[in-house]
Length: 265
Image (cartoon, rainbow, N blue to C red):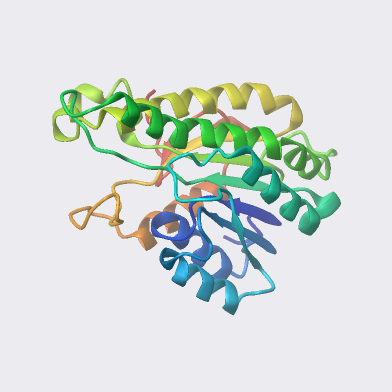
């Protein structure tokens, strides 16, 4: 990335897997953000050691942010989002927040026979309602960032953007090709809903100069993806950040993969 991807970014679900790797590659890049807000459910918990070490090493760039008060699938706690908003606002002030990467999400694998109502509700709450509430509450800061580029009509992540991490498994068109390999009712349905949220936000925020799109990271070797996945987190995130850095208004409201290829809804 030749030029700075953005001045400030909020990454949700950043204590492990893809989220942690996004923070690591951003902070290691000479063209990375000046401010990185790395959020997770429990910043002081045992699963955040790597993130805390990274934040300690880069105290001038990384700020660890809590978005919930407890270990729950419900990441859309209004109180915790508002607290996070205050913290970020105090840091960025009139510059606003340029980029949100809604990476936090959960997967409860389940066939039709195995899937209970509570599983559907919990996964939907985490994967759809959470990103929606983050976008809603941080909209004003995104608008402030977009206004810094009021002389420009083009949209980009350097100006103001929301990236929702989705999946190939969300595609209704492709579902017949891969359903038998991974039924995953709660995950598939919630991510398809996340795609619609992405399209709605893209239309709603277009007038504010805010780009919104969905990005599939590939099948990645993480706790969720498993050890058989063909991609390492480093490979996936390298591709994702290249795509993010080169997004324009033409990509708002789209679903792309980590190589920049279009995925049908």
